[in-house]
Image (cartoon, rainbow over all chains, first blue to last red; front, side):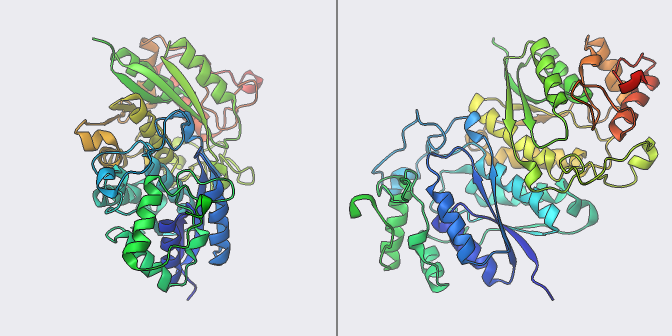
Length: 232
Length: 232
C-alpha cells in the first residue's frame, strides 16, 4: 500500500520542522506548504526549503499571500516593535504584538485547499499550546473547531471522507519537542525560529521566539546549535 | 453612535453586491474585501471596484492570493473546461468543476484577519444554499461551523467579543435576491457573474453562473440588464 498523502505546514522553524519529521515517521507521504506572508525576514523560507529537501518530501510549495495588507502585527508591520528580553512568564500574560491576526486560520485554509486537490485527508500543523498560550489560534479548542469546520468545507465532507488536523506537538514543552526531534535526527541548526533573523539566518537571541528556544535546549540538556549574531 | 464596522466579501458578482448593499442598509460601516486569486478573468474585479465606490464603502482592499498554485478548479486552471449550456437541475446534481477547493474558507479567513485588525465583529458573505447546493462551502452547516471556529481563532474570542458571520442571501432564490437588490437601487448591469466574462465585462450567457442569473431575472419578472457578448 502506498503512503497516504499528508499536507504539512512548514515555516522553517523548530516546531514545524519537528512536525514534518513526525509526519514522515508515521508513514505519510509529505507535501510541505510554506508562505511568504509579509514576514520581516525570509531566511526562514530558505530554512524551510532546506528542511523539506533534507526530509525528502514529495513536494514543497511556497505560496505568496498578502497578510501585510491587513496589518496589525509586529511580524508583518515594521512600525510595530518586536519585544526583546522578556522571560517566558511575561510572554504568557497577554496576546503579544507578534501575534499575526488569524494567521493559523489562513494557513490551514490553504492547506485544506491543497489537501482537497491532492486527495489528502491529513493535515499537520506544529502548534503548541504550552509555549504559545498567548496566541488564540494555538489552543486545542481552536484546532478542534477548525477540524469540524474543515469537514464541512470541502468535497471530503460531502463524500464522507474524514479529514484530520494532526497537532503532534500540541501538549509538549519546548524541551520535549527538542528531545523528540533530536531523537529523529533533526539538525536544528538548520531551523530558524527568530522573529528578526538576518539574511544569513543568524538569530537575535533576544526576541520571544529566541528566548523560548534557548530555554528549550537548556531544559532538554541538549547543546543549543542555533547560530546567533555575534556568536552569543 | 458611529456605525459598527463590518467586513464584506465582494467578488463583483450579483450576490456579493447585493450582500454589500444589505450590510450598508443595516447600518454597518462597510470595508469591502476582494481577491485576485487566479480566476480566469479579472473584469469582475473592475466591477467590484465600481460597486464599492458606488456604494460609498469606507475602504476596499484587493488581496492577491495564489489559489492557482494548488489548482483543482476550472476557474483557476485553464486546462479544465467550464461547462456550458447546463440547466439548473443538472448543476445541482454534483460538485461542479467550477468549485474552487476551500475558496470560501480561504476568503473568510482573510476577512477574519482584517476584521480583527479593524476591530469588527461582523463579517458578511453572499453565499446562497439554494442555487449553489453543489458547493460544500455554501451550505448553512459550513457557515455555522466557520463562525464557531472564528470565535476561537482570534482576540475577539479570547476577549469575549462575539463574531457573527452574516449570510443574508443564504435561503433566498436568485429571483428573490434580484428583487431585493433592485428594491435597494442596485444597478445589476455593473455586476459580473459570468465565469468567462471578457476584458470588457461582457458575459458568455452559457456557463452555469450565466444560466442561473438569467433565470433569476426571468423568474423575478425583471428585465435582465446583463451585457452579453453578441447582445444575446
